[in-house]
Length: 386
Image 1 (cartoon, rainbow, N blue to C red):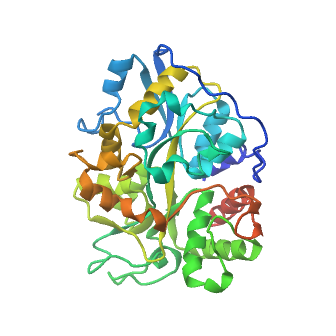
Image 2 (cartoon, helix red, strand yellow):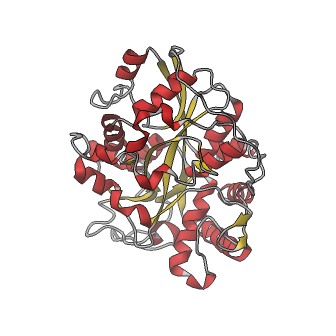
Image 3 (cartoon, helix red, strand yellow):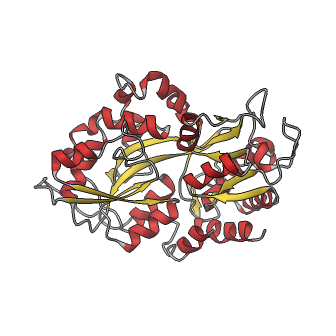
């Protein structure tokens, strides 16, 4: 809740994006590293072996380049946008619901892919993805991607995994004989409205929802109504991955949308946790490393973007967080990930995932849609009304 309220003040851009301005000129050539690099990142995205010595893709980069890395962890896309608006950072690992806002707000600059030798190794499904490419101009380097999974307690679901998101949207008795009321969580971010819309696509087809991020007034109202029902069931709205982990371990939470990161962390501790990809499909994120328009360390930033595309880094990040690498070669020969790990994390599910994107007023599926600033204010109303 605190995160959303803070981010609301940062949402001043027009959400019917119109990219008419001439793009800023990208860097022409690399120079010497400036000695420092600051990155706004999701939890678990920039590791230096402090949590687990097997996962460290920072130390060698610092030794090779002389660029000392500092990281500011952000819990939501709105927080990332707010931090980039404040300035003082070089890079951000932006998801699709933040990336175009950063482009529209001129907070990030185009990149020169010729200065990133490993660009050609990026998955073709991502090289020109619309969340970082505007009018054939690239505004970042693909990092990793994946689905928002349904995480559940295996004691509460003894015989089999839950098949549907129903367990977090409607009151019901779970296989352990107890109600789900007070035992579930939901994501503390306006983009979660899309999860409700995705559920309605399957269960109320008469609404005619084609895209969970493109909702007309009636579809949007139905999604909010579902979220108000969910509000009566939710024990906590989460945005901090570590707090969610604690809640599942110590506070009796048994089901929630989550990231593979939390699932992997708890499985490593032998917690009775598993995850599934429900029958309705899932929302997801494809994250892009984007360069601040006023970066003070652009040479170190380009060095990091190249470093981030190495199969070793891509595989290690994906094994640690439970993501899919943007460089397919990372699935081969990385002892921490492997082909099986890529498949388990969703490599073959790309077409089934509804990737985060910023809702805009002029939308492709039906012309007029409810823009993101409404999602922000209304979601605050939903979760604040308990």
